[in-house]
Image 1 (cartoon, rainbow, N blue to C red):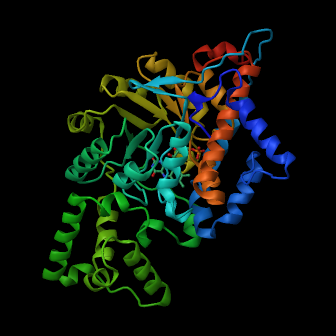
Image 2 (spheres, protein in one colour; image 1 turned 45 degrees about the horizontal axis):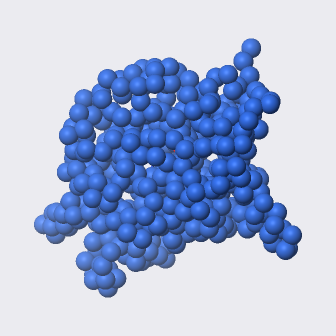
Image 3 (cartoon, rainbow, N blue to C red; image 1 turned 90 degrees about the horizontal axis):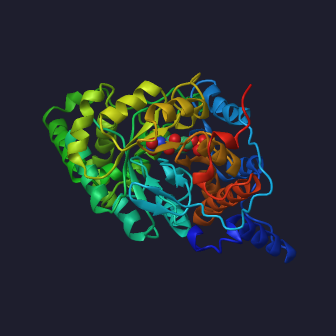
Length: 437
Ligand SMILES: Cc1cc2nc3c(=O)[nH]c(=O)nc-3n(C[C@H](O)[C@H](O)[C@H](O)COP(=O)(O)O)c2cc1C
């Protein structure tokens, strides 16, 4: 599958994808990755362990925010126009000085090793094959340098969780710049981990097993923090608190985190470094005291465009503008943080109005098809991002599965655009939607 911008425009990615699927069908082949959302979800659930499914599909509390994301999209209806020439379509957009072939990004998703061993490499390659930006998670399973070198060389962005150590933040940002990231996305809705009953019921948090900490265990500053903690532990062993009970599960956890940690297994087992690294990670992961006063420091630490992710209130969007950041990303973190919160599509218009066209607005949470993307763009988003959809594709068929999900979304968006009488994202505005009475 070629980069979307290479596709013959009169054919468009929509028709091209349909015709590939139907031609395959004529020779008896069905797609491995279902195009319908419910079938995709079912196939992904079957492909995952119960722990992986809980982590990926679970949201906060009663999961009402995840529902609100969907019902908010459903309340908006497209108002199609007829007799407009839609032969020659261009899905491309420009963001932060880069031309991308479509207004779609792969949202940052952590701990992908739960889903597939190729993890971050798989999504980077899948997005690169379509020319779309992949946002690498701070909680990745594979270090960003490896992904930059072997992930298909497509556009990459880096998502940052602002750690308690500013030195670590500086190091991660410098690495992202060196790896060629186009932008930094700072996620600000995860100062603390949301209350997620599906994970709580299985008593399973991947990080405690040493998963999702590859950006840390490959970082020189983090490794120094770990070494300092180990030295302190030798000097004052009683600081470790009571020894954990030795059970078969505890031994499995220890062996798992040791196997995942860089370096030699036997040496790591002897030194106990992987366990101390997990402890260090849990300590430094995020800061609950982060405030607007901290933002100028971030500006000093990177030349890259800064996008604030997790913005929902118009006043926060205004403050982001005043703070001189380069973009905002409306998100409910897939409903994984605040149960009972506003659906992202309902938060979008207020943020768009506050920003007044002065910087890009990205939206995610609940985008499941091309028409959702169209609605978000008509409401003023510059681009949309998706998380769970491609994660489900990856669970079913690795890189190929993630690519097929992204391609299907683009195909459906292309057709929704054409069939509603539009030729490009720039054509979309409030008039593309039915007035809400
Ligand atoms: C399993 C999972 C892990 C995630 N990990 C991260 C992360 O590491 N960093 C981050 O900023 N957002 C993370 N997110 C949120 C996504 O970036 C994105 O906001 C969300 O998935 C979009 O909603 P959707 O899944 O409905 O498309 C995660 C989401 C899921 C489902």
